Length: 631
Ligand code: ADP
Ligand code: MG
Image (spheres, rainbow, N blue to C red):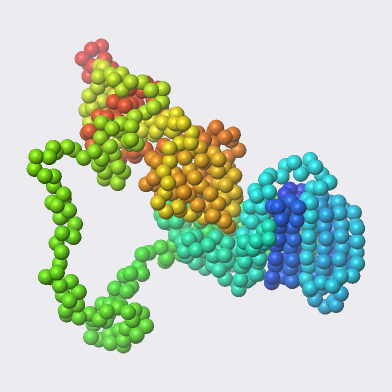
């Protein structure tokens, strides 16, 4: 148990100082970091009402000697730094000696602590920086700190606190990160009397990530372990197929400390380049270990910003760690391996290995037998009507029945379309646009000439040639439709509700915007522990990738400070963009005619929701000038 000293002024002045207590989450972060620095192997965090009324952190670390307790609560009192040189190689999470002092200044703190070699522990109480009690206490080895009524004496700051549930989710995000950065510590998190997280503390990162984010996320991860020039990079990377709509699931830990680093992020994303779509981001939990003197953490009070002595070296280490893991792991080769084994089995000279294979790998596989297929599917009992294709024949209409084109038909990408005779029910090009409805009859005379690059529709209309960007036009039409629909937007219940796991901040952002989402046609609720459940989506998105959609909206809602109407607009844009027909999609002549008719009867629709033009035109005169027919 190291001695706590108040730092001399000249050292204290070298430390990036500033506020550490902004909200309950910042208190929990500092207290947990202290427990980790104290060598704890087991740590319990408990909060009530988002931490606003009650926070407790209990550890089994080195404890604090009675004579040092009062010092620990003084500004610039620390056991972690002694000299200026120490600041050049910081190996602990804390070093500023400010946290306990600032926490005690704005709340009611109680500490129970007992170093391992003492029989009797100490209780110490301090409220608003005023010492209230110091006495003997029977308590387990280690330290418990209880913080009550944060900002009880600074009502101005109290006002800045968000709803309890939001504050609680921020605390959860802090606990998640510390649990993942220290899988060697068993961490338990209790929220309003319910245990919401527990990690084993067996040192396995994947186990800790599993506890924090669950099965779905963990299943997408592959391991990496790499070393370059003394920089070790290890951790878990999501396969490119599991790329996300934002960076909320990128976690970088540098020497056990959560950091933000543009260099590391750039290296990660560079390594994924070409394997994921533009606008999608990799997820990861990456640990980077460097010599301590290689990093300067004394840059910012929050200690999450760091400076590297050599950014390029870090970039290279991360880049190669990610690239090599992806090259090795991102191959669908498991099935092929089984096949190879099967082939070996059939080779007479591979007896040894085939025997092993038979015994261990797939004992339940039936023996290959000349008559196997014949006996399983006896020719005589085979029911031909089950063959695909035969269905059509059996469903042919009776003679005399009027043959009509089907009322509903499916586009090649699976989206159902209706004949325009039923304009109301259709969502895609056949739909009726209800914005400032002009009569369909109002469409000027036009003739669809055709389509270029499956993207631009060529139309002759009133002495002009029109070029219509079909995606932009359709997006705008859907956007107007969504905006004009009575709120909430028409939505459809999913057959099976879908769960989506998010970072705690995104989770919080989605849940606190549940009303806005409801108005936009989404029914998204809480599924607990960072997971949301999607029950309803706007009808036009029923066939969309729900996970990607929710991640995308969560990312936006997390970053956006916009007022509700603006948020709604963004969600409408996003919905319209996703549901709209894409450039390059095949469209039938029939659909084109119908679509252009709808578009031209709505003179308002001239720009897509992003402001790009929907339509450009060239008059006959322009054309004739170009050809030199007229001057
Ligand atoms: P810092 O962590 O920057 O040193 P703090 O104000 O957070 O400053 O803590 C002051 C000192 O109190 C620490 O240096 C440490 O010696 C002691 N301390 C705080 N929390 C604990 C704990 N849970 N177990 C043991 N010692 C602790
Ligand atoms: Mg500290």
